[in-house]
Each structure stands twice: as structure tokens, then as C-alpha cells.
Length: 131
Ligand code: HEC
Image (cartoon, rainbow, N blue to C red; front, side):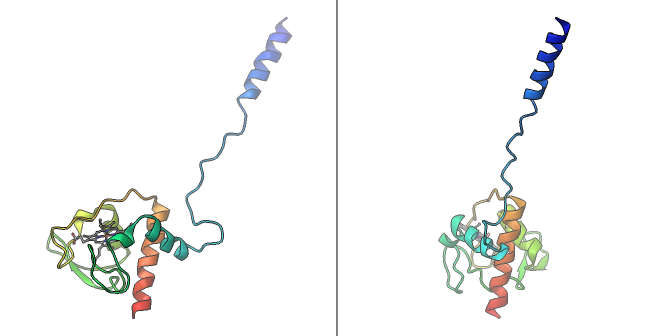
């Protein structure tokens, strides 16, 4: 009897060892580079609805050529648009002020760190091409 009980307990314990599905890692779709993923995110997240990448004005500033520009932050500091600035623009839009767009707010995005990196890389690549 004890052996049977032991067997049942063991079987029950084994049943718990079923492999659990891993959470899907967030990364570029198969066959896409990080840069291509950044471009896809720019489309799929709807950034293009407010930002053009050909220099033209829209609801928000054009984003080609933005990397490397100077910006004065609300706290008075003047900074160069680098990866940190771009990250802040996406995660804390109220922390950046673009001349000519004062008073217009950009929505805050809930993006995974890898998605943020891909978008930032894409935005930086636009400026390289603009030069
Ligand atoms: C509803 C319109 C809207 C959408 C959608 C939007 N933005 Fe913006 N964005 C703005 C506005 C307006 C500003 C200027 C904000 C300010 O000056 O306070 C801005 C500012 C920025 C800046 C700072 C630009 C600079 O010249 O310093 C970056 C970078 C940026 N947005 C990236 C993005 C990305 C990437 C997405 C998509 C994930 C996105 N935005 C989606 C409206 C939008």
C-alpha cells in the first residue's frame, strides 16, 4: 500500500514537470535586422502619423536629421540629440521640448527595451543618411 501511495505521489510530482511554454522573446522578426525592425516599428507604432522623415512638418517635427541637433530641455540644459535623448523622447515625452512644437504633446509609448533600442537605432540611421 505504501509503495502504491509513493508511486502516485511520484507520478503526480512528475506531472508538474511538463515543460512550460517560454514567453516569446521580443526581437526582430525572422529575417529582419534590428534596423529593419526599427523601421517596421516606426510604421506599426504609428509614429509616421505625426512625424515625417523627409524633413517636412507634420503634427510633430520631422525625424530625419534630428540626431546630432541641439535641444534645450525644460530644465534649461542644452543637449545634443543622442541615444539617451531619443530614449527620453519616447519614454518621457514631456521631458523634451522641440522649438515650434511647444504645447503639442506626444503620446507616451510602452515599448520593450529591445523595441526602444531598435527605434532609436533607426532614428539615428535616418540622420546618417540625411548627411
Ligand atoms: C500624436 C502625434 C505623435 C505620435 C503618434 C508620435 N509623436 Fe513623436 N512627437 C510628437 C510631438 C508633437 C513632438 C514634439 C513634442 C514637444 O516639443 O514637446 C514629438 C517629439 C518627438 C521626438 C523629439 C524630436 C526632436 O526633434 O527633438 C522624437 C525623437 C519622437 N517624437 C519620436 C517618435 C516616435 C519614434 C514615435 C513612434 C513610436 C512617435 N514619436 C510618435 C508627436 C507624436
